[in-house]
Image 1 (cartoon, rainbow, N blue to C red):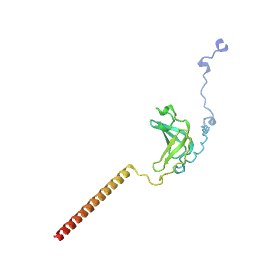
Image 2 (image 1 turned 45 degrees about the vertical axis):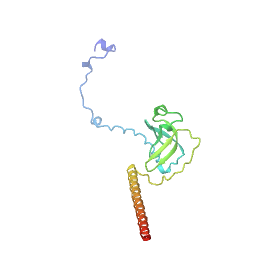
Image 3 (image 1 turned 90 degrees about the vertical axis):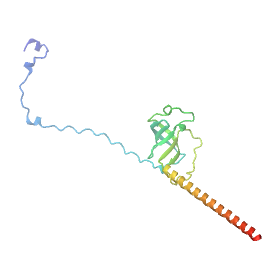
Length: 190
């Protein structure tokens, strides 16, 4: 060794190289890696409320899930997110939904209407001083699709036309009867 190596400098590579020796068999056996740490399981999500369980006039808390030009979709724990229309975001005029709510924001809303057939929940963020219990007004009856409504209107129009035709026919028949009786009476007088 040189004086430089004794003074704390690293020895040249030639001096440090050691001949390769085989390691004992025990050392070359594969070592099992420790099991990866498992993330704790999230608690199960609470069951979602069915639309039939929601009552108009109820005030509930929810989270804004999505924003659209026409309003904000809020998760209130039901099977379907509810919609707060832009006109129901505030008592003041709202130009942009983003000016009032942000995605992920917790909000308190009032359930205005629940349409289970169309799977729609109408919500409002306006303060309600008159939390009302609005009647269900025949919501239990089946809501018709636009095609069913058009078909129903066409049937009603056809029925009205047939009734009008029968009325015209009946009126014509009555007029003919009156005319024939009048002519007979006039003929009998002669």
